[in-house]
Amino acid sequence: MVGQQFIKQLADHPWFRPVWLGASERSEGKTYAEAASWRLSWPMPAELRGVRVDSCTPGRGPHLMFSALDANAAKDVEPAFAQAGHLVISNARSYRMDPLVPLLIPEVNADHLALLPAQQRERGWSGAIVTNPNCSTIVLSMALAPLRQFGIRSVMVTTLQAVSGAGYPGVASLDIIGNVVPAISGEEEKIESETQKILGALDGLRVTPHPMVVSAQTTRVPVIDVFNKCDQLDAVGRARLVALHPGALCVSALTGEGRDDVVAAMETRLGLDTAHVVFEFDPQNPADRAHVAELYRVGHVRRHVASEKSVTIEAEIPRRLLLRFRKEDVRARA
Image (cartoon, rainbow, N blue to C red; front, side):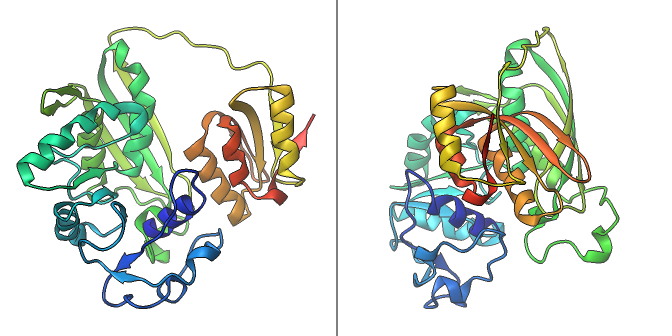
């Protein structure tokens, strides 16, 4: 599932273009369409269906590699690629807590990339490894980052995580239907330690973890996509609430019209690189549920109101990223 999410995001990315796919011997030589059992609600990118899957051999493929390997495989494969000169962006947990490997959220701790020269020097690599955090850690860290100025002392977080986070085939149906799994093995430890590293301070050639105490409880809930979390923190300082943007451009995913009209409306009414928008989704539609997850990923959500028949999300979203939503799913509304 992680690999397919990589493919989906990179295929329509303005900066990157997938040109090489590597996998195990079982998939080597097959086309991507033959090798992958596609599980996402979005269709497999047409330009990648016929691409031949190569073996995970260091030295093959481009300089920049995105790794969706299982942690056990990543432990050996990723350093081999780094030694061969590749820059590996890893989703695996294997090297997240390595003191010389950046655990990166670019909007939060881009300065931690300064660890890379020391990593290359100490390991003798011409390439490098950069990791991204656990999924729940990312959301928590981005929420906490602007609050560091108030002197965070402790954080308690409870997560409600979708079954897609467990990969495929994931959680057994009899364990999850009509149930909440009260703990996810290893997940709480990741959130607690990774958040401290991400929000820590770069001190020369090391990161000093943030001194706050993080206490996490993780649960698995019976939804396909989208994670939720409840945070409570204790801080030395006090924050002031800022009022929401008074105007909103409303976009409905239930009725559908041209997304070109939406972009035009943004340009004429807002004239900004980001737009204040309201999306309405059908929670019973799997594609709409996937769009909710996408909106949380690319937008700054201000308000989320859910009922049995609709989900309304108010958010700030870059204009160009609105084009990721299907044409039939969005329309401008006065």
